Length: 387
Image (tube, rainbow, N blue to C red; front, side, top):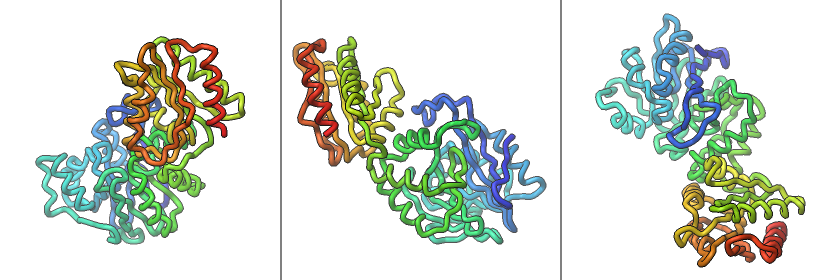
């Protein structure tokens, strides 16, 4: 059981899930995930979001521990995604006097997720600028469409100066995970929210007009100090600007020859004082690779030719970059082929939908195994990347 008093009147009733293997069915979460939920106890009592069906029993136990013999007046639903909204029907059944407060789009989605749930006489539809009066606490709502679903709203508590930020500012990992916030928040952001940088920028502009002293997201820790750090990270990420100077090398290799070229390039770059990170797309976490591609200001793609194209893992990687609006980077290409090298051409074509990419003039073509002549070409590419 986990309930934490965050302010005089706001309590955390979320649940850590340490047994989940894949978040949203695709992202590896070695340290689990949190489903955050909050109670605001005032003249009126509001619950902010529920939790995933995996933790229904624990969530209700946490809720009851905070409520005691009191009954909630409102369930505020900021986000209808099932990892936060799965217990709406059970909550509305358990507390028949409570009303659900949410956006028009949320109520439309409610019918899709809960076939027999009728809240016609129990719903309060809110939009940006509307205020929910709880007594001393007054929640004002901020539309945050596509951050990262269309129905999303933030809520701002004027009394405690808290921004309830839905999925924004979230991260992978449970509350007791001892790790740097930025690493798993970055992987979370680019893989889940990253496509919608323009929308994140829009809501950041709205938030800039508020006196925010705490940010309470739906995943990860509550942010109560150094908020400029977190806001700055989100501003960098959502504007698609590099966070760090460095080169990220992503490769796929059939018999190890393309891998050898990628490793040699990394060695050359580091000898020139550059920071270089490398990943094997066939063996390492694809979400980490997407994160690193956005983190650094330069990217090198190295692929063996496969079926007159690139390796499937490289194709998947580039598709994910394209889907997440990858842009504003310098890109180098390395291909390998024994009789008809085609990977570089196909990688270049696959990136055509990305904005403001500058391709290195020194495209490397290796015929089967890397040879001495290839080292000179790799050196030229390293020099161009460092220029």
